[in-house]
Length: 270
Image (cartoon, rainbow, N blue to C red; front, side):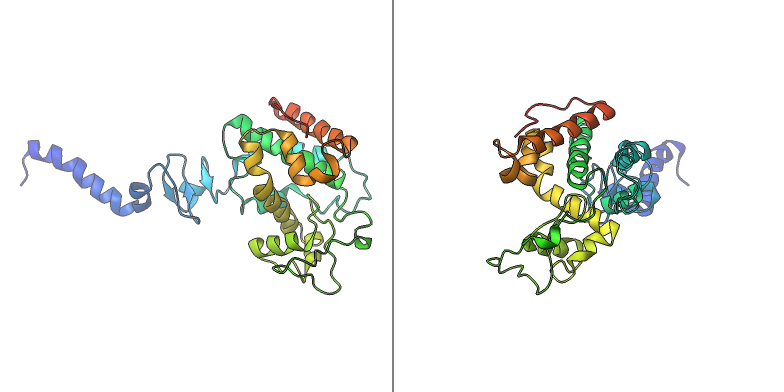
C-alpha cells in the first residue's frame, strides 16, 4: 500500500502517463507545426478528427476554415447578384465550391493578423470580380480565337487541338500555367484544360493555386494591392498600360475592404 503522502505525488505522474497514451498527438505536438494531413487544434496541438479539425482549428485541414466566417453567403452572393441572370457562371460559381476548394489551401486568408486576412480575401475577390464580371464568365470572351500556346516551353508542351485561354475565377491562361496547375491540383491541364470550365471545385482550385503561388506572399507581406495587380496582369495594365482596368480592380478592392471593415493599406495601385 502506498502512503497518502506518496500517493499525492504519484497521482499526477500516473495521470500524465495515461493521458500520453490516450492523446499521443497532444503530448508530442504542442504549439503545432503539424504534419500535412493534421490540424492544429484551438489549444495548439496536432492531430486529426473533430477535436483538432473542428471548432477552433487554427491551421491545416480544418473542417470549418476561418475564411468561411468572413466569406459569408451575404458577401459571396453580394458579388454574384450583380451579374445578369443569363450569365453562364451564375450557377457555376458557388460559395460551397469555393469553400471545398479552399481545403487544399489552408494558408489562404489565415496568415498574419485578422486585418491581414481580410485584406487578402478582399484582394482575391476584387480580382475575381474583375476577371469574371461578378461571377458571370467562366471562360474568356472570344478566348478560343486567341493563341495562348508558348511553344518554347518544353516542360508543358501544348496538346494538339487544345486551347489554353482564360478559364475560371482568375482566368487561368497559357499552357505552362495549365500544366503546372494540373500537376499541383491533380488533373491533366494540358490534355483536359476545359475541366476548369466544367468542374467548379477544380475551377476555384486553379484560382487559389495561382493566387497562392503569385499573390499570397505579396499581400501578406503588406506590399500592397497594387503589387497583386502587377502579378495578375501587370504588363497589360500597370505603368499606364491600361489605367481603366487598374481603377476597376482598385474600386472592387476598396469596396470589399469597406464591407469587411478593414483599411485597404498602402500602395493599392501599380
